[in-house]
Every structure is written in structure tokens, then in C-alpha cells.
Length: 235
Image (cartoon, rainbow, N blue to C red; front, top):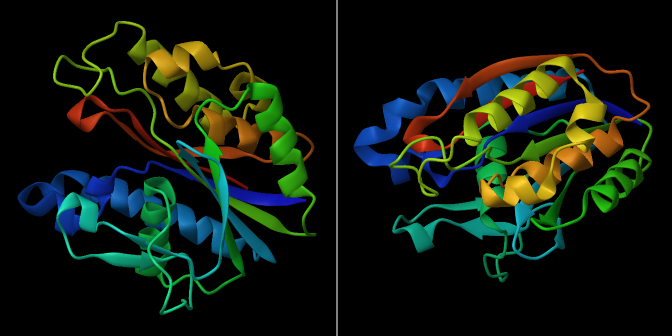
């Protein structure tokens, strides 16, 4: 059963070494992510599943390694405690950012597993996957990694799209209210056009929380660099 969830953005720029001189611009987002992980820990889960968008689906055990060397910095991470010293970095970016957040807060409250969800996964399949995750233990928590639209300004990665701000506002409202139906109703095609990588992970959360009767709280909402970043908790 799902007992808690945290929703965090997953830009590599959350890692200060990547942001360099611009690192302070995301201090508030980092602080909100830390608070969100605190809510997960307070729920005392017996399993934490980290869900993030990726080009290809995959599962990753605790201790799986990731790296930000592809972004020009010598920063390696693991998904939770422990690692295989002989293993190559394999975590997709969304899960690598999660690994960095978990390492930063010293997560040791429950075993961890990672799940990369294909960005194009159909909403119905996302909901089914979420329900399956919620059934993996008596007290399951989710850390859901994904950005909102990337089209909020002319300098955004996807340029300015007038549909982006309303889309992000509806996602923020749904996360704040723990509105499962609203998340399930998100338009997958529109999300793809707006480069909202969080759509599939959010809909996995909706499937997991269908019968959980959780309350939501929005901890952070902003669009630095023209990309929507949201931090929320369900508990």
C-alpha cells in the first residue's frame, strides 16, 4: 500500500557542481526536495521506489551507479547505500538526480529500488504500473522524479508555448490536492509537445495512490530557465 510520495524535479542543475556560479538560483528547490524526502522518511516505509522518466524503461537495484561526468563534472552517485565497485554507471539522469538527493539527505530509512519509465508510456499503462508498485509491500513510498513543461519562455529548451503555463498550473493544482483523477487525465500528447518529462511518472503515482486516500502539499513551484519545476508531497 502506498503510504507517502514525494514529487521532485530532476534537472542535473540541482547538483551544485553542474550549476557552478548559478547554483544559488536553485537553493530553494533543493531545500524543498530535502523537506519532501523528510516527509517520506516520517512515513516509515518498508520500501522506497524511485520512479523517473527515461528514453527506455528499466529497473535498477539499490546501489546502482550513476554519473554526471557526461555533463563535464566528476560527480558519481549511487541509488541508496552500497555499490558494486566493478559496475559501470548506468542510472538514467532522472534516477541519478534522485540518487544525489538521497545521498545528500543520507537516506537509510528503507530499501530502495529504481524504476525508469519510458516517457511515451500510455497513461493507462502508467496507472497499472503504479497499482502494481503500491502492492509490493505493506508500506510503500514513492519518490517521483520529473519536470513540468520546458516551454515557459522564449529562452526555454522548447521555446515559448502559450499552453505551457496552464498545463503546469493544472499539474501543480493536482499535486497540491493529491488529485489522482486529474493526474490520470493529463494529455500525453500535449505533455510530449511541451517536453514535460514528468507526465508518465506522475501518472504512475496516480495509479499507486488510487485507493490510498492521501493528502497533498505543494512545497515549491517555479520555472527557472523556462522549465517548470514542482516539489510536492502526498502523505
